Length: 495
Figure 1: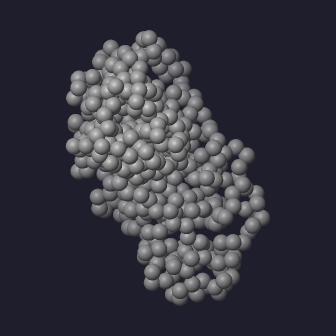
Figure 2: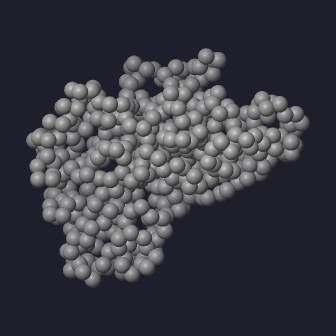
Figure 3: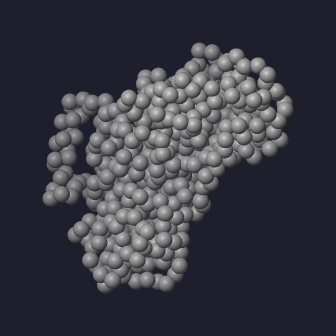
């Protein structure tokens, strides 16, 4: 998750939104449609149901992975003959919302379950004196190595989470033997916090080291505990065991037929940012009606790879193009900027994002949240508040990822249980259609078109608002269909 700025939670009524689309202030209202972004949490109405299982692996793949894992497993810790990984640890997938790891802090080796977050730069824990803090808290009195620097500090996140406390120093380890431990490691010890209901804190893994806080992987490398500053993730779905590797990567997590595609990092020295050259829905440049399904970026477009973000967020002007192509002809619901569509994943096409010289697939089995017994399922894609792509776990859980700051690159390859694929640009060319952002007029015309589809007359074009009958017919009517699903306060659309 992005730190340093707190997101807005603006809740606009549909009537207000439609009115402003046709007013002189509509350009400003566009930026306020993001509503409440569930970066570390799901929307309150999102069903907490497991996704369908992945496609079964071939027998040869299963045998290969079984023997490889057995060979590498020794006394509960994985050892790799090639020396590419120093330590491979199991991490937990918590309801497909976040991924947490156990760490040990202080001379007493107090254990904490923290989110691994490539979108922030600090280790966050909570002090025992914080009575309102949820999760495990740190008892400083039992650690002889603890130092309170007396420096007050705070941090806030895009989802509204925040921590206020003191910069502190102690030993932090990833293993209970304290082999992979960073001594005199600085972290923020919270006296007040909000938003950490499913973990005891988080540990930042951005690229950014400052004079106040180091990234723990870099400090482990500097102190000689690991052989390189590379770290890697296998972010699996809840049915599989996810892992985190220090000091390198393990190719046995990569699907047999795949290989790592390396993407150069952008000029940012803080986040794991890469450039997006193009995007598409499906493999065809145009649909049967001649409408574009793929677009080439004309300007530099940045994507942040962030394990601390649950969903995938597209630039606010890219999102309408993708969601329209994705849901074309499908009945769906919209609430607070998020969409719910049919639960049958065969009705959707995959999304592809081009980074470096490779297309990366996000299949429907991942971005459509399974909800057995429900008419509509949550689409795990949203609009960001700016022109940045925020590629969270909806994207990253398709790929084994290698984070290599020393060589300014990130490597991605479909992992052993993934159904995603990568396609070289040499095989699938960049779309011929140039990306042109959606304008307010485009959105207004879509609403007018929808009003015409449902047979409503009396639309005032060029004025400041629709007539009341249009608002009623297009947004609030058809309650019989609404009653067939568990959601309320939704807008219903047919694109």
